[in-house]
Length: 324
Length: 291
Image (cartoon, rainbow over all chains, first blue to last red; front, top):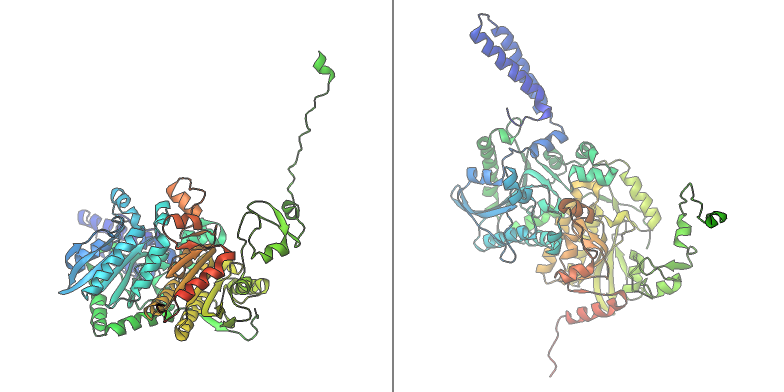
């Protein structure tokens, strides 16, 4: 199989061996059925062991898998009549973010998401899913449009981060991200955010101020990439694996920290193994959360978003503080 | 030959390089005198401080800590600190994190990387937050996010303008994604304040980068910066690596941002109080046309 990851190699090897044996018994005149049965039991146990104990670094690898479904994959599986809209009306069209209108089970919605490429050529066009300011401004334009026409907004988050480039700084990368955080806070429609791959830093958060926050089981969400964290903390980006473990960036970590509402379970071994099946799992969460959120008034939606972020953070108070 | 009669007049090459000590490098006695890193002029520290830590010769702005900022910007004795007793926890159980915070607390004599409170500028009441880059590089963790959010809420409650002096290297790594979420927390608070008609003034000082620049620092109704301040989202080195080209000398300086339309103005420190007073007075409610 293509694109197997290192942590699942034992499973793949055993599965291949069983297939070989089955093939062998077909041609040769030996009965190996009891051996095969034993091996299949072992495979089942091994799969359980490995897929139920995926380490943070392995999740990072799954989240970065070249075949991992992208925003457009989920859009085509989950929505009808997607109509893509381009451009920020000010500078240009950033293809690292896609967005437009569509119907979700009959309900008009606006869908926006980071978009990686599937191959080198597309990745160059889409800048590996790392947006420039015009990408965030396009997203905001579409959100404002959704607000006007009272359509819920669904955001798919999947980026290594905002693009660190000269042009991005010249056009106000900081302001573009900040403006999205600020304006998303005031949207009068339901906003649902789903991290489908890598949720990298401010570039991810700029589509992430929602009423509901979900993460696919093997996605990550972090203040900085594990490589970046290792470089800053220990001056050695080779310690990325260690950083991935200590930074608490996986879906279970974020659930525990109370930042996301729920984890959307993934197909065994990762979403790339079955896009349709994965889309169905997402569909369930969308349906449920939309139903709940459509009950809320505009004021309640804004207050709900305010409260969800207002309460994030851990601190305490001391008696012997230093007087300035 | 004639030239052989003379000994060669070459300087004997040293076998070892000597590294000058830190003290020798600065050539200046500790404390009494200060050397400007920009124009290299040596001046009396007292004189420099009297000039709001702006070089008397070239106008270079030295870093100001929170306390100096309060003294230089607010009316005398008008400052009332809030949430001064709030301190960090270690939500990710990051090794040595709280020890580092405590060390900086002792070193800088402030409790966290931001000081918040109310005060007045030429009689105009304001709530302000002053970041201090000497404390953990002014990085934003839960406490910084919470204190700033509470200050915004305080301004809302008192119906007075909110002024923030930013100075930060960005998010605090040791609090991971909780740091990232402080960007959203402060931004949703600013949005609510803004919807209620609140005035937001951001004054970016050296350095204002990463998550701080990509949240409240850029969300002022007025965005100002001090001359020469480094302001940007991504670090210079990261950008150079990603685009593989040399960046201009003034890249990500206040002047660069002004040129690219990201700032309302650059304000020098000696002008700051007057200019902000002017703005605050324009924003006083009930201005009427005088016939």
